[in-house]
Length: 235
Image (cartoon, rainbow, N blue to C red; front, side, top):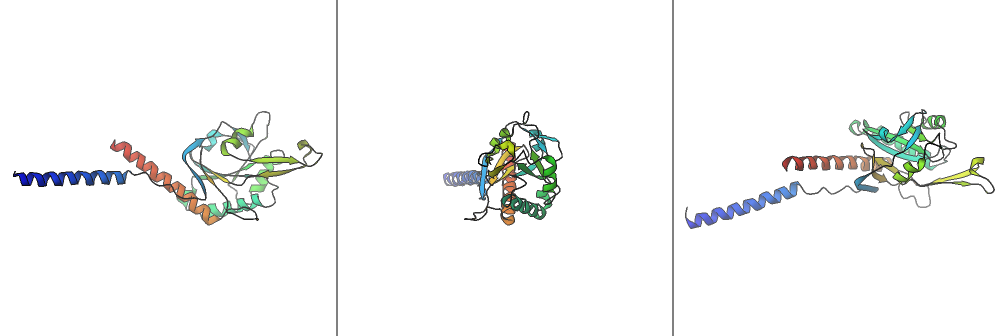
């Protein structure tokens, strides 16, 4: 091979190597996370060990979260506006979800007012929105500590007794934050969905936004998992 041909061959080989490396870097580039109305955790967060009671009177704990996605709403059954509005939006959201995204999703409603919201009260309340929604409360405060569940998910709530009254009197006001919490099939917190900005009005969720954000998170995590699997196989 003449010197000129060797030089040309070396040039083509070097450029071919650059093209292959560039293609590999592009193929295995980190996927940009979707922009959602809330926060998508880059690494999911495990929940502390907890034990609650569902609306059928059955114990509900960490292991019951595994194997499917969960969307957690919270509040109390005598809430006049925010809670029923959020549950109505969630019912419409579930109805409009494509089967591929709906079949492994369960909606939970956690009561921050355990004294009033018994399992039977939750059962009656949730039946107005969707028969498949699961209600969660505390029935044995001496054994069930709601703090583990609430702190793991960042649920903020306060029971404020009326002037001169005690909580045990049942005369109190309930206040709580407003978010939706998305748990992955490992039972870990994956995303926090925030309500629309309502100005001076009541904060709430829009079905179209929920559909967009939920499916975007699912699709992103599925693609990221496939990319990790492919990288592992090629390693």
